[in-house]
Length: 313
Image (cartoon, rainbow, N blue to C red):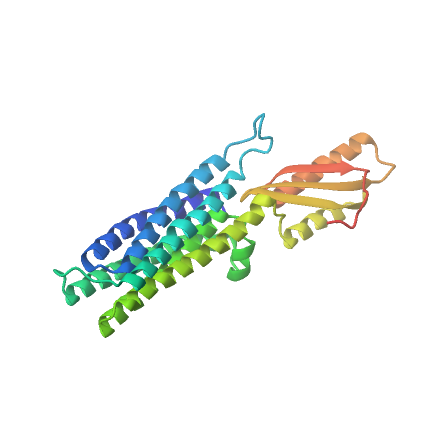
């Protein structure tokens, strides 16, 4: 995923969530809906998360220096992990708390707001929020599909672009939350019982907590040092296998430092009849072919004539 594409998706998400949050809080104030309040909190968290993702993208573009030889690309993953924590603590946690409190202590709408007025506020905001969230999700989805045209579920798990992944997951969770809020508001009105609204808030909190767990799990693997996909490894093998000058190779080790930054190291035994200049030329050529394969391979290290365990890959 190109950084510019992810940034566009993040900006679209921030703009949508900021406007939606204001509408939801206004509706919650006039109707007293706990589900709507939870949805407002959800949108504020999503807006804050968008700003944190932008910060991570900016910091992640800082190049190598004396203290960070490979640059700061992993900052993208760090701030994505912070986003997951925010989503769990300030999103899911607050929504669960609000719903449980309303469930235990009851809920009453403001006396000066009639049922019809409440429904107009709630349904109007929910409809508008659904449109904006849908547009934001479509933009993020479009950018994601440029990189992963097939197999959405597997691509979602395999994706190393935690920024666009966060936008897509958050928007999907937001749409799910809107439908839950709609159900809670409708059932509370039909049965004249605010308990449904409280349960809707709790369910929204559960959805947000699960999304936060999923995001944290995916980002954790990348922070630890996740390798490229098996398909990428097979492409690297194909390049090395195309050289008859290489007798055996192995110990190919890769690690994502960021969505578009990968370090790769390998060992190769070259034929003994090759001169040092010939080996140097071959190594330089292999590096160029790997970079041409995908520009994400920023750091490539090939250790010659030192293979110990060629089966490790």
